Length: 222
Length: 264
Image (cartoon, rainbow over all chains, first blue to last red; front, side, top):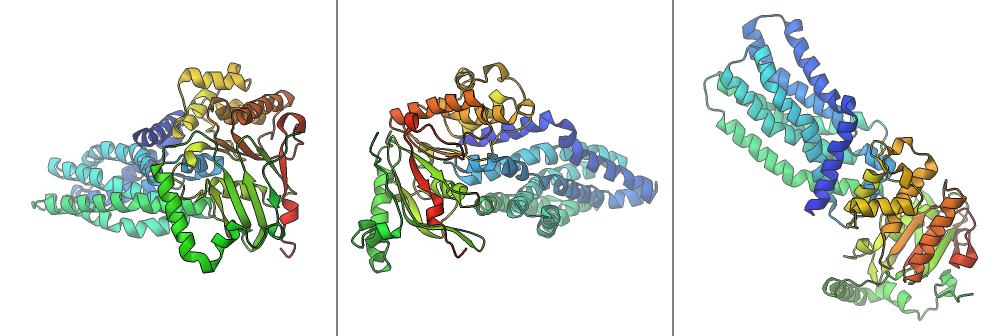
């Protein structure tokens, strides 16, 4: 079971390393989109500080959506998905491994680069920590939900649009509590309640999304 | 010539007193449930067998969209047999193989392995090698890496030495470190088929157009691998538009055109 998970996870990382430009595209989008806001909104420190959590979180959400479209499409097209489904292991492991690889390649770089953008938006140290923590808890939720959307729309035309329509509404709680955590810290309150809800959302999504993705994958290859 | 043990017949060939038909009638639902439970229990509790799974199906029908591809198809595939599924384009050859692999569900009937539905059998997939029309190779991996991944997920021996030996067996040793994207279609097919060279147990192979894009040497190598497999008691279900070497392989033919739903 562990070998099966690791085989898929490590293969996806290796494939991403072989296509670095494509793998870096979501992160590049995130960097460019977030960097443009100070230029567009103006250099007013208070305004930037106010909009920073929302901007970073929305850009992270869109960067995740950008990359999740192809989560299963390549494996579906070249027959790899069929082979994985015939491996005699639970398809839940396929969904879990693919989601984990997606988070490692997309969510983790966003978490790592988030403090830099905190500085760009003139955020305080505590707020930057809250932003990073909220992204650490929230981006796996986005990858897991994206996995469900990608599996449900596998093989369909206009899958990219459908994924966004399916996944964005489900991602709104993570967005609200993610930005809320930073807002609470900036207002001098404790963000522990927001972290707890984000943690609960993560646990709930981690329990529900892989089985849902695996059911959708089985239907898609029928 | 070897007498074929597998039988391919239409609905008319099944007698009313056939146990298969009795089990599948609605009047015998409780009996069927009991039989299924019993067989499942037996399959779960018995140790894994090293023999090839006995593949059976009765009154099989397959639908794609609104079109019924074939109906009333029965088949038995026993150890050491090669079943060659033939038919015109669009008759459902690939669909039949996908049903046999448990990748899709039939419109009617059921494909069973040792008496258990292939979709519910706990060990069927461990004793199955399915190579579809797509090669399941990643363009950015080398031939060795791509084959190693497929062997690993199927829990087959996947040490580098084993992988290289398998590639050598299909004549690709010199290209073992070449990225898949630089290989020709025939070479990619050989990499996909190299999985078969690793098999050492009498499993069931389901091969969709395995000779596709292979040259004469590739066909010869594959024939030898398949012959070795049947000699050790393995079984093969395959589709091919190329004529098979009937002297070497002695295949049993299923002509899907006979089971086509002409109304479709």
